[in-house]
Amino acid sequence: MVQQVTRGIKISVKTNFEGTLLRSPDSRFAFSYHITIENQSNDSVQLTSRFWEIKDALNHTEIVKGEGVIGQKPVLKPGESHTYQSGCLLNSPFGSMSGYYNMVSFTSTQKFKVKIPTFKLSAPFAVN
Image (cartoon, rainbow, N blue to C red; front, side):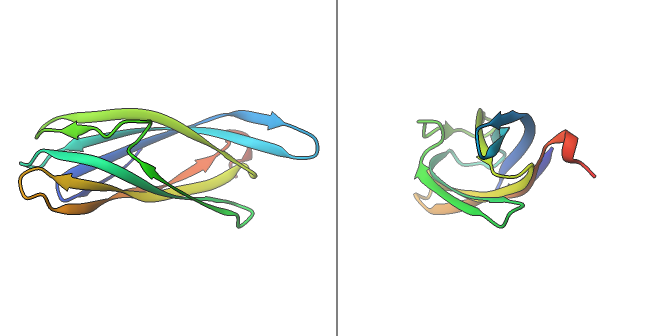
């Protein structure tokens, strides 16, 4: 598990290899990730959007931007957390993801970014 705290918002990430999709002529490698967003600050906050940079071992980079996470824009009061699961497909059995969430504080109405720590994606059969 990888974790990081930005402005009192803790991001925890667990990953899992889900399998290989075999399609002629290419194979794709499926990964899931489970993210917990925990509000350790004294302010209520809302996640408004996300930014992802997904890289594979073949130097392919995909940028993903969007509103909320999994169709939701969770509001977190102090001490609350939100957990969700998503996934990605890579062209190689190794890769990584990193990014940030755009958040807004209800106390100050200030917008801020919460870093999502870089996490590795690797198929167990390909581990060296």
